[in-house]
Image (cartoon, rainbow, N blue to C red; front, side, top):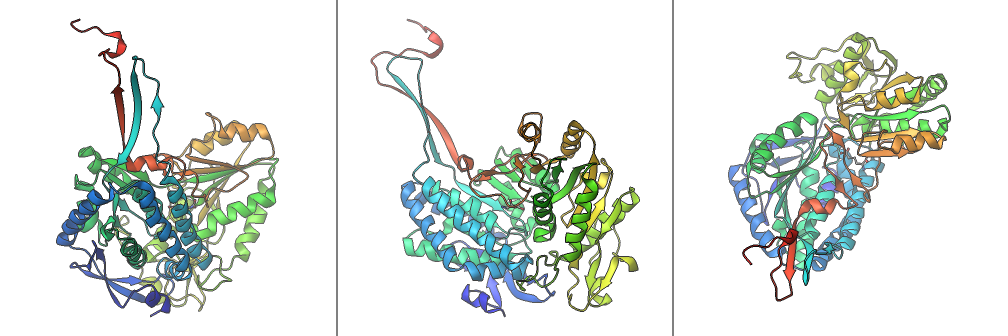
Length: 535
Ligand code: UN1
């Protein structure tokens, strides 16, 4: 067992349900590292009883927490941020072990947790409403923000710790309790984080059930949270398909959702662009986290006059990329999360070729023996076993486990159906444009609307891109890439991305209920709109 697990309080078999006490009466599952296919440790998941207890305990904790003054709540979150500082290296390493992103990115994710805690501490003294001019004499009109209740937080494998913290740190200062259902691929990260939060709560005399954890499947845990009226808000990260289904269930009981779903993020490269900057941003955006970020760059829309130069630089960067063990500091791209993800990527590349696209670089499975490749699971949507072709394989002994690929760079014409979908893998589609308005139209012609970027030194193009007729995404950047957003801004997107905003700016308002108050300090009873009623 890796020693970081022990330092984080994990053992070979771990309880995956926490409501102030650790339990887990459901199935025992293995957490498998995508680095080498080895079992890291096992987890006892939550069963129906654990879920019921977890929800009841989170409610009990909420009733005490909501009357704790917000700046006092902020003190617990301040200590939480400090605890993450102490455990940054171990937690970052665990993220790498369980999820496969490189160490620098694993630690970067923990830094996001620290940053959002700092943000939330300041916020704990700024949860203020407005005072509004009343139309009636001797009246005051104002609004207050009150704690909302239990926040259900459903997270994805790709950010196994940070996304919880964006929700939990804000929810905590807002006076809510949180129930977390992590991805079933990354339960150990969730257990380690919850153990840290538990310790901080015990030190500050807070009921640790404000940070409840329920590890388990969508059926056993997710759907119980989604259908339970005691959870007024479900904040969920995942695919567009997951979000569509979840929204229908939550909205059927008139609950609220905060959705952070798929992206199909593009970079426009114009004739005046600084190509050096553009290549660096595109390369990090497309290959970083092995293309498994919601904000990963998936499309490049490049002006025909600079298309050849950009393509050549990108091909070179892809060629020189160091792929391998994400624990090795020299590696820039680790494995995909599992074999299913590898199969999904190869299927997308086959489709791309069928639809007329050309692969310029990569798109192969790196493996050390064919047996692991043939063990790739059945693809549910294709209905049969996944059988790679010879030209889809690249044998190198340094890649055990079967989850390694070379990132794919492809040239396409706009409008291919595969380009309109988010494939959660490192595939980058290059397409050319002639006229700037055509580039904007191509940019917006996908169902998703998360992140976007333009590289230009022409201020008219930059401003148009940011204007009402420009990018239709929740995030739009100039001379900065699509991924790697700071926590200080509101994070999320439009259209099929789900419309939610998490993290900075005023995203905290999602976690509170707004109350409008009218106070009459006069001796008359004037009615609004000048209505006289029986006088
Ligand atoms: C995600 O992929 O779910 O902007 C979130 C970024 C990160 C967050 C990504 N700060 O890439």
